[in-house]
Amino acid sequence: MKNNKIIVAYSGGLDTSVMVKWLSQKYDAEIITVTGNLGQKEELDGLQEKVLATGASKFLLVDLQEEFITNYVWKALKAGALYEGVYPMATSIGRPLLAKLLVETAISEGADTIAHGCTGKGNDQVRFEVGIQTLAPHLNILAPLRTWEFKSREEEIEFAIKNNIPIKIKKDSPYSIDENLWGIAIECGILEDPTLPPPEDAFQITVDPKVAPDESETISIDFEKGEPVYLNGNKLSPIELVNELNQIGGKHGIGRMDLIENRVVGIKSREIYEAPAATILHKAHYELEKLVLDKDTFRFKQNISNTIANMIYDGLWFTPLFKALGSFVESTQENVSGEIIIEMYKGTLSVLSRHSEHSLYNKELATYSAEDAFDHKAAEGFLKIYGLPFKTISQVEMSNKQRIPT
Image 1 (cartoon, one colour):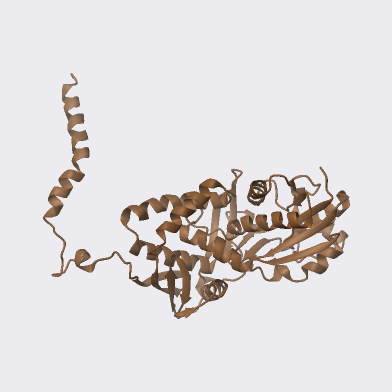
Image 2 (cartoon, rainbow, N blue to C red):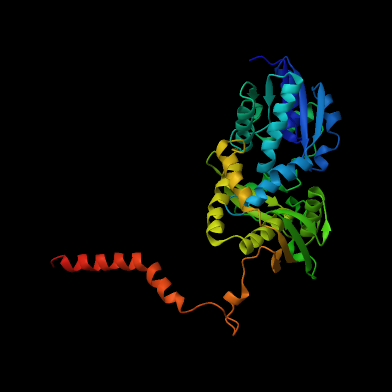
């Protein structure tokens, strides 16, 4: 394997900070780090100085926030993609975009190798490597965490201290945190024991619902073709809208998740997530779809939503099936426009109002009052036809039982 230039996916966390120094010691190659800004905050502070001081020749920081929300997050939102019915997949959705950035950087820099800081039992190795293989099958891939000598995060910390690598993590608080605009993932440390509740210091942007404000707060969200555009009547950019909902929702304890989930490689892991904006928007979008989609499309889309969520989680964003399913989703969003009003109170969301010009709700058909326009007499014939197959099955079974000699 030629390693003239190695492009390193650099987050600034413990693993990639140690990895840059480790690669510079192990390979005779120019090391170029690339960091995609997906809305993480503190992780970006001082990255360039740290990278150059630990063996890299160049540091690239690319702002991907707008592309992340408009081309990735909104697709997942319109699909209703919640992994195992709960997780809005902030990390999972960001990985294909970062894989694309790594490939583009490798091509522009004339590099033949990409290195990532994913573990051998994690999900991200799948998302990065399948994405890279799909987009640029000619590139080599290095995964130091699968081969290096460190057996624990504590050993990595020791290496960082020995080599004067600045790290924010401490031995008494060894959380691994991945953050972007769509949410935060927290793991490691005491969180690896599923019998224990997560400590309050594990949460980054949400308050404990028990100490959230005693007064509820009501917001309105307007969608256009499945995408949120207005918040409380104000048109906001996608980044502004997500940031604002994260702030409002976090204040009311919205979006905390404590999950046992199935990783791609087959093991179960305990993960803590915070995703106020994602939680609010998925709830609002779902309620709007229930108002405007016909029964068969809504029911079929529930199956597609689950499939798409699994594909995103499993790192299959750039596959033919994902593209095809995305086309179906887009076709369902043509009439998903309207306003949803939601009340937030101590970690809970309540829908107060649903409105759309494309609403399929007809009060005259639904009401039980004197205005009822439904033809009740038509139900008799409908039920005879609807239940006919099952009636026939029962008749045949009963007839066969009578023929069986005792």
